[in-house]
Length: 221
Image 1 (cartoon, one colour):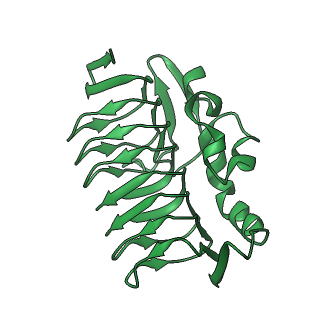
Image 2: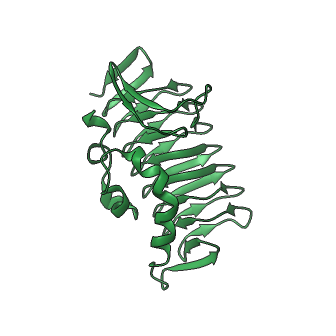
Image 3: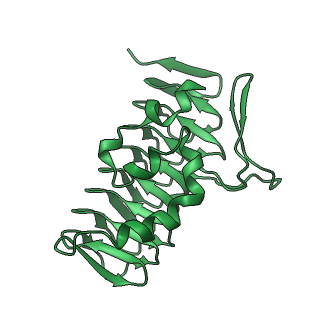
């Protein structure tokens, strides 16, 4: 599944987690290592630009964090990021430069590349969101299968067993997810793809396409 490889989904120059991602072929392989990576990286961050504000929590001095936001470590909040009213960061989270985490949005075990926007009532867990990707209001990642079995990434007849019980979605660079959509466990969306509002998405969606429903995915013109 070439389209699911890190090199085909992401511009690694747009994340502070470049070193971690470069070690792996597929992005979901990174999920179990996010926590340890944050702690290791956090202790190396430039103290001129970043301030350690709690146990394993580093926040850029240029970031805007609402007093009502909750941030649990390990976490790194990048330069010029915005953490809005009542955002809930449960830990194991990297929020990239210029990213927006909005009101009542919840994050857990995630990497948000630079300029990502999850601005309104989103849940993003066990996921990686590429550069400038955007999740519309109320769109979420579903990160555990209803039968609690291990997640398998499927693309037609091709399958990859991930060995992971928790796996939300991998969004390539500049993906647009419409309002109210659910990204089911093991979803991988290629870069520059648009997902229609109120979609239920599963499996692999090609890059540079428009997802209307499971049976209608068209190439962008």
